[in-house]
Image (cartoon, rainbow, N blue to C red; front, side, top):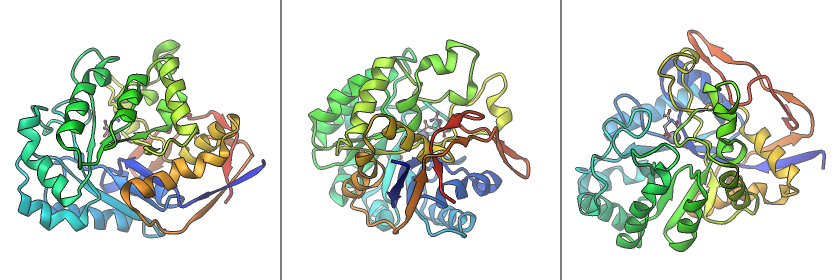
Length: 338
Ligand code: NCD
Ligand code: ZN
């Protein structure tokens, strides 16, 4: 096949940041995607209706040349009241829960993942049908953080059977077993966890632009995740976790965690599915599964990919902001037809 149409792509885990960075990265998603689930880990994080609606307007302004739906979220707090959640319910697609200190801008995350501490808020969300998206990592050894978090996912799945729980950006094969075990668990998968291993970050020269939380893992993890995506397992959906940081905060001491991939995601996924003879499942992975899981009716968009080399730019810039994309200066075998 030399061309392929993706219908109404959805990115169900996306960081758009704010100000000039938002203006730089927003259009890479809005041009080609119908919608995206937007992460709330701004500084300060989004925890009020006023801040949320103002941010949504800034996103719409930054993406105003395109038809695009930002599905916004708020940052989980243990003291959200039932009344607050009723009031904000129609504005949000989900609430994002970060354990304290596990990733970029999670310093106001929850300090205890004890079920009883979380119960009032999660019970309210369950009653109101608001899904919870979780960054599932502990503060243990970096390669084991996700695995160590699995008992927490399991106890949440058991304690809140009617709550939709999204295991964000799963990165290890052990997570797949748990995902399959409970009906109320779902997961997002990124391009980088499907296409990289730790060797791509630290196996040769250090690549800070492939550094993220959770860290990409072993070949067998990548393979197991690929199998889920390539077969469009109905409980997984695409979520890029595209998380831009300024070039100078990646290429420095204390380099920030986060991979910018929104400008290359469709091309890279098409390449991956094509190489494995699974293009027939790409629309389910990139749109239909998310539509079913979240009950969405996305804006109609048809994006034509063609089998033609795409040399990924070394960086993108707007005013003072510069970001380096995943696969910078490498060649992908599929391009977006413009
Ligand atoms: C994300 C960021 O930079 O906001 N970083 C990352 O490494 N993925 C936060 C997150 O999703 O963990
Ligand atoms: Zn993220």
